[in-house]
Image (cartoon, rainbow, N blue to C red):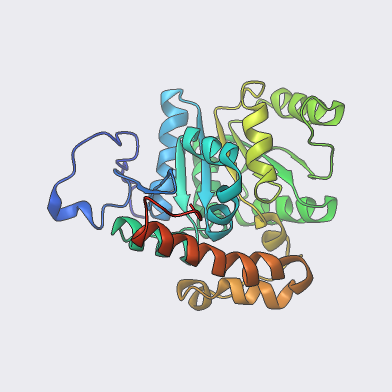
Length: 280
């Protein structure tokens, strides 16, 4: 079995030579619309989380995709939340394309379903406790059972659905935070969908005692079999959006049929008219 390699993510200020600047996966992010986006591979992400736990560091791992870059146009608070996160991972062709066009960087693309098994295996090996929150009651139960089936040694500290009042200061949100803290989990995995999951995690980060937290979007639905995820050849060729649009047209048509063209316009405006662009 290949040994885990310590990534360069914890030292983002270290110098990078011109020779490796273009394909550096972890040390220097591509800053897209003010958000620093890294391009680690799956092993890098797992090791980053494991290293933080070993060193007693608190870390939030978020992901950036085309939907995020569309949302941040009119949501400066969301941009600030991502700038504060300890690691933002490139997830999806849209974010990778924006990084290439605006920063000249080729970033690796990693979605949570691509590296969750590596993380679960490492958590089991290191005897780290994992807490899942998000999705429907059926989806989260099935997702938890599937992770345990795949990784029998995984210590599941808890699993809760995501259908509760997430408003700041709400009683239900406080109860969820209290349950997470009582579980003494090491890794919190949050799947409410963007941007709700990032906003909720940011609002409650100081109240949570877990050292690591990760946002995963619809991953619980994919793990549970409640939603279909396109095969790897589709995602590798930047067509996952089309697959999701076909399977969930009523929910996702605006995100893809309106959001993606707007993102392309925003990227082009930023690239060619950075000083005068109103789409930034």
